[in-house]
Length: 246
Image 1: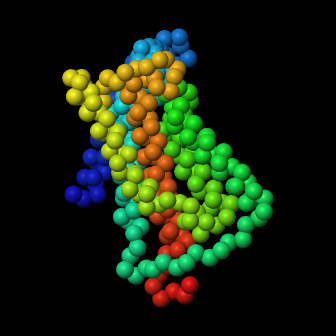
Image 2: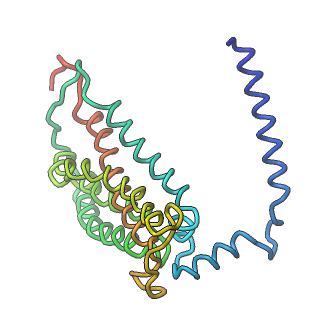
């Protein structure tokens, strides 16, 4: 297939997609109006299933299958980065050198690390109740760990980073989301149907399957981001071509 043919096919597909989007946009409610059918249905469904955070209800209940795809993209990205950034035959690792750090920076990182861990854990644990959730809390937890890199150097980060454990945890946590969907099938409902006990509204145990999936996503995102950054930091700090002096 030559370049002209490829360009023609692209333009044809782009025109069809643009026409479909224009038609679809014409059916949307007016911007700033009082009528929001999707929002009204989403809020009603979230409250019916005793999930105070409607965003989490949408992500982990009403369209949980879509969110499973999004989590799979993150897992695939971590897996792909690990494969592409593994040590090549013409590379070797050197010991990371000590880096000077300003006392104010060290104090800043040491102070914020426990605060960020607490914030990330809170965001995950209360994802079904208040703004936050597994994705946001998982990133906050991974950020907390890397404050050691900011406050000290890469050698300190490597000492406190349980990379081997997180590398193993990433896959089961990602698979837990998919496995939880089988609960609904086992109970005669649809895949990822929220069939667990809904609990009491606005309590940590409320929301049924939402809270459980949210926790699994928090573990997967936190471990996945740490593992992903570990591969890039290794390349930037430790990996050098063979024959290059330390």
